[in-house]
Length: 415
Image 1 (spheres, one colour):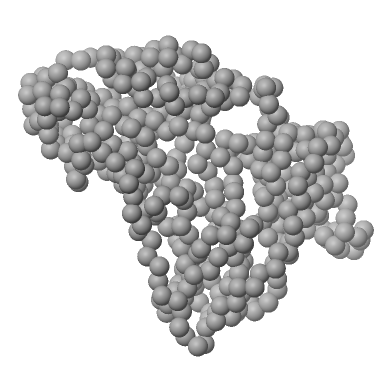
Image 2: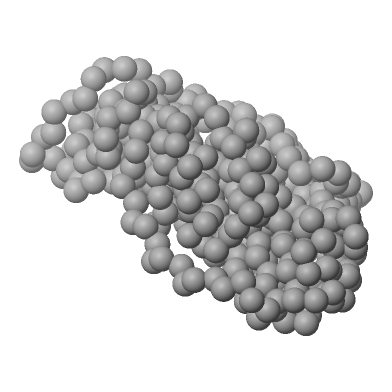
């Protein structure tokens, strides 16, 4: 794909009354997870959680000393699976060790891995990668108490994966008078801006690897004290190779336009999409005398559902996907094109989760003249180490092929 940069770098702040100090000392090193086995559940522990067994040792205050007169800080922990789903949430009192062992559906050939996000008032949010049964030592760095300071952590969310630091990346900071400067996060995604005037500042985060990024924008207030704000953002995802097949009853001039209700844009197309397609289509589906379908790829905001779908073994993908497409009314080259494109890309996993996506919520499709029948099927397809429980969606209605019929398939491939 070809993209060009959209994010404009503004000139550095020139005001003598405003200065940037980027002298950030790390407040606490991320402690690596270590294997200790799954601890037994203490039935009298206040940290017991219905989501699974916890073994928490948090009897020390944040300074590491026993102190009955100091109320320990409450730490919220969210456990994210490789898929990006939260599989466990609980709190612990004070810093300390905790065993991460969320309940699992079925044992697979490999040990599940997670990222634990730990958050506490007055402390920097921190991420702890670990495996099922690991014990992590939660020790969060304190936020400095000072004046004229904006600080926090920038964290990437979603895109079929767990949270990750937006590490050592630029942020564009614009002050209330619309002057801008660039600061950088550290290895733990932390930013620090000091000695700035009061008011609301705009932070722009280049949030993914696209050469044409849509920056995420955040408002961070500076009230003269310490303003702490974590900046969470979702990366964009790519709708890969949606194909639109048009089958009019007779040779017809057809106009097709795409819309993006949640934001996004076409990044690749054939024939070229220039605000819409205006094409002549033959009864056999041939477009402009040469194209078998309208092809495009689009950048879209992250939206994935896993509540409904199917699980297919890798050695039955061709048969399973072919039957799935046929049940939705796809036929002939529509099915063949899908299998030829996607099967070579679906390797390296014993099972695949297949989930239908709400195409109309992401990309609208306006066709004129309006087809008698329109069927769109977008799928999110992710590799699985083991089969999972998922509810099949309702069976689709039949798709007669008389009159003007339009069908579209597209997919998002999870990692």
